[in-house]
Structures are given as C-alpha cells and as structure tokens.
Image (cartoon, rainbow over all chains, first blue to last red; front, side, top):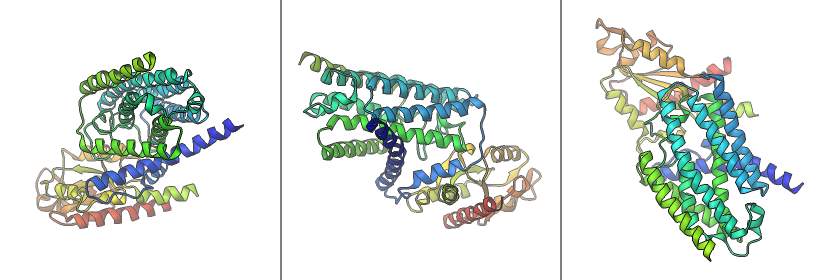
Length: 282
Length: 146
C-alpha cells in the first residue's frame, strides 16, 4: 500500500517539480544574461498551449513513439519512488530514449534524421556512465535496490565522489545542456531547428516535454541518493548541482559529438572505473 | 478548468517564427532586437523558434515576390492551428517602394491571411512588440469564436 502511495506521489510530483525546475532554469539563465526572463510557471503555459494546438503528424509512428517515451519516463520515475531496482529503472528509461530516436527516425526530414543520429551518440555516451554508477551503488550497498541505499549509515558521496562527478556528465547530456546540446536544444539555439523534435508539433511535442520533466526528476533523484542521510544536505547538493549545470550551460559553447564521446568516455568512465576499483579494493 | 488554462496559456506562450521574404534586413534586425536584453520579449514567454511546426505566430518581413510566395504559403500551411500572421514594415504591409516592380506580388496578405500590420520602415521594436500583443489578442478571439 505504501508503495502505491509513493508511486502516485512520484507520478504527480514528477512533472510538477520538473516543470518548476524548467521555469527556474529559464529565470536563472535570463539573470545570467542580465534579462528578466519569463514567469516561473512559463513551462506549464508552454505545455498547456501545445496541448491545445492542432494535432499534426507526419506519420502514425510519431504518436506511438511520443507516448512510449512519456510512459517509459513516467514508469522509471514511478519505479524510483517505489524504491525499485536500479537496473530495471535503467532499462525502462533506455526504452524511452530509444523510442524518442525512433520517432525522429520515422520522419524523412534531414533535421530530424541528423538529430536522431546525434541523440544516439548521446545515448551511447551517457548510458555506460549511468550503468557504472549503478555498479557503484551495488558495490557499496550489496544490492541494486534503492531500499538498500536507505540502510546505509554514511552518505554515499563519501564513498563514490568520482561517480557523482561522472553522473554530472550524464545529467548534462540528459538535460540537453551545452556543451552537449546538439541533438536538440532549448531557447534560441537553432542549428538543427530542434533536431529530434523537429517533426513533432502540438500535443505530441507537449508529451515529449512532460517526459523530459520526468527524466530530469529521475536523474536529479539519482543525484539525491548520494546524500540520503540528511534532507537539508540532500537539497544543498541538488541545488548546487543544478546551479552548476545552468552555469555550464551558459558559459559553454556547443561541441561536436566526437568531443563528447572522447570527454565522457575517457573522463567520465575513467573517473567511474577509478572509483569502482577503489570501492572494490577498499 | 483545464480548457480555460489552455486558453489562458495561448496568450502567455507565443512562439514566434520569423520569415524574411527578401527584406532589406532593416526590419529583421529590429525583430531580433526585440529578443535582446534591452527589450527581452522572453519575459512574455516569447521564444524565437526556427521551425513552423512549433510556431504560433508568423512574423513576415519584406516584399513578397513570385519566387518566395510559394515558400511563404508552405511555411504558413505547416503551422498548426491556432496561428496568427503579423506583417512587419512597409514592404510586408503593401510591397513598399517595390510594389510596382514586375517581380513583386505586393503585401503578405496577397498570399496568406494577415492578422496584424505593423507599419514602419523599418518598424520599431516597440511597434513589433505591440503588434505581437495585438496579434495574440486577435487569435485568442478567433479561437473563442471557432
């Protein structure tokens, strides 16, 4: 029964928090550029407007792919709140990511195609890091279940600091922030006219936006697990991490996918492996 | 309740697409000036998108000629309803000084329905922002009637 309540909390709080974070993100970004920025609720206005628009699709695949992406993202957040298995969460969110790429591939538009290829590269970069972080959880707690994390005395950050930094890479890629925003991007960057999202419009674009909020919450939730012993410190850690993300987003230029693969595989996976060896030996 | 939130959101989140039908670039840089920190239209939720499928408002600058009228029509058709069109500058409104030229069709309204005309050569950023606000009011009304 408790699990069910937690699942419902996750499903409801996920998009609300995600939307607020997206709104705050735009405010802080505007502040960096000495502008005022839109209201905090802006992300909700955007999605509500999109939901009310005409349903235009290139083909039926897009509808399916948008829905599967949303359902997979929501399911992974629900599993996370239900203290589920980290590996299962990983696989469910991977299904969502793959369907986003499939939706983009379903349209013939070159922008959408190039965006899909780049999205695949991004998946290729962050998924190994994510799985290594989960292996780190296993080495510390002896289980892939989130429940095992709560029984730990010490914050996990003390035992896996390098894995946290590597998770930061995954977070930046997942949030599609500079320098990793080449499959699609927020705001005025228009190199690929939204890449994977080019061919989506109206309500289906809204579905993808909501799914994106869920994914943001999922990755931030994973970050939160690193300081589970104290809620205040958990909040400090999350705020600091997200502020750093926004800072990086605003101070970095977009890079190429080759640069990303090199950087994330060598540095991200390197740090993860060093941390794993330390955990294994220690 | 959700329906009224959607209606309210329409005016709060106009995503703009800017199409240049061969303008002299005067109006275009004024449109872009609206997005700079000085005018900062993003505080009204405006985003300058590069994709007609994501856009709510189409800003057209420049004289429409026989070459680009098909492109203009195509872009307009790709925008999902509800949508608004705003013609900017003397050229967009009527063809401007080029209206008598043999290759010129005339104003934007010869090809697609225009909701708001923003005069000027070039149009001032304040006038463009005004035009967008008026356009949003118009399209809210259109949705109400439909």
